Amino acid sequence: QVQLVESGGGLVRPGGSLRLSCAASGISITSYDMSWYRQAPGKERALVATITSASLNTNYADSVKGRFTISRDNAKNTVYLQMNSLKPEDTAVYYCHAGRSSWSGVYDYWGQGTQVTVSS
Image (cartoon, rainbow, N blue to C red; front, side):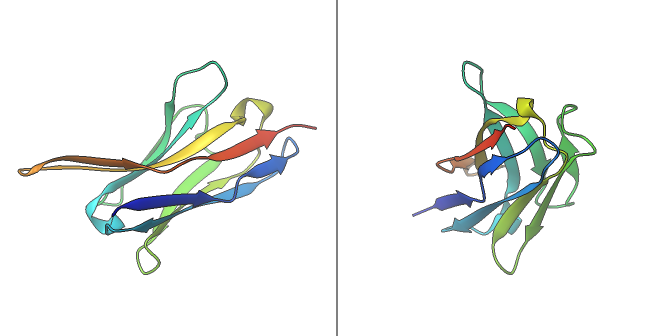
């Protein structure tokens, strides 16, 4: 059974920092492109950042470039999202996603989400 368990969310003041973690079980994150998405109230879920399985390339939404960093620890089978200089518009539920495509099919998994609230 595949599980992605996010943690690290919470309430933070504007300009503050948080680090989200996504602990995976049932899969090896080295075989998946790992991403963070977020969904704010009344909005669609949107891609925040991705780290690829093969090349470890990273990609970011324009709104978080220079402030957020995605990384992974293969030994811990965990992906992180370091969020700095947080803004009120970063308030959302953040979801971890694992995805890959192969000859055998398309595989994608989601975590349950963790709430991030940026407010003074």
